[in-house]
Length: 502
Length: 67
Image 1: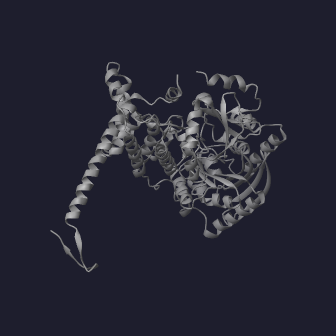
Image 2: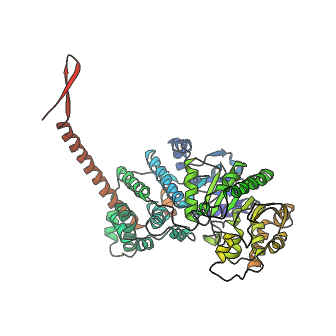
Image 3: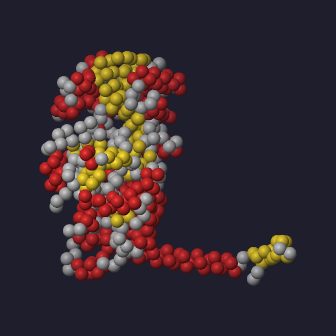
């Protein structure tokens, strides 16, 4: 295949340019970072005809006008990376890249519905989506947006939807499992770049889902067909005969509408998890909680961060305070119900500055895909300017048996500034954690905490939260300071951190 | 190899999924056609039972049911 070779040969001559690890499957083009770290997309000659149709049909303008596709600026060809370029685009940057395994139920559902709406609009313009990967959607705050400008190809009357199976693997299977079996099955997509096997999803779904026409057709039958046709050599003639039958455009519209209806009817109620009602059942009095908010507001006002990662954000009370300080905020929590509530509330307010994500800091999203470079781990997507870790330390240190120095090293790698709340052992929340186990955490005290964190941070401020003995610290990462002076890179800091943890 | 073949080679659509689409498309379009016929019949029967206005001197004064 020709398209790969010129890329490879020219890469060496373009020092400082880097093709993104996820951008190599589609010969139509690729995404790369230039020397200044700006993300650019090259379109190859092979995609020229489709790209022209994409523009001339009015589909591109319609998508951008609806805010469904990431807008871009077309640059001159001098920005190209290889010779077979016909255009170079500078898409608007996405503040924080997230992966489908980090989305809550409604985020994945909205991403699915957006993909289907785009598929329908494309058909109206005589084009069709040639892939339907969940990785083609990103979130700007609570708004999903399609980012793959090269996913559109000419539709020829009679052809089936090439991306149908991919859509079912990436969206329908995980959503059905989350809604009908258990929300925790979302973890199945965590290690996969190509969704969930349909036969596995079909086995895991309850039998009653066979009475849902949408799930029966698009999931259970799809799985059966996939299994039976993959091993039929003798029935090739019959298969070819069926495949050669044309699907009318109206038929294709109906398939996509049916998928849309099936996805739309899938629902999950975010109740019953451990953390969803945390703020109604914690150790704070109203005044103390108000005081804590004031402290965080004051510290953020002083730091003026551009990005904040709120770790253990629950339903995002402090993420909103971070957002008020002007920062684009990632509101991360391990509990899917908390993130779901946070997302639904933000979606109602059309917030584009807070991105809720399901992230478990004790077991963060790993790098996945080919050579572990297709999709970056959550830590590699940092560092952020400021991290908030409020009422989190006891969950990491006691709930997950993590020593203070390892926690400090990890935080020092992922942020420049840290606002962290220390929760003393006497606190009712810590006592709850210790209720059912022996207290082996003799080093869990303020002195031990300060000693460990001073190794990786410069403590710049501390504010006691009234009544309950908790203290909020503002710290500056020493690893990040070194990385700015060029002595240690952030990556090295992470590698050292990882090595020390093994 | 023309461009369209290259695009198809990029993503394996799966034989089963392609065959299934033919079947689903046929089924759904038939259903839609039947639904269309059903609604037409329904609207026709409603029309038969409809309350029709009676106009005298271009002014609607009263209505009466038609059988």
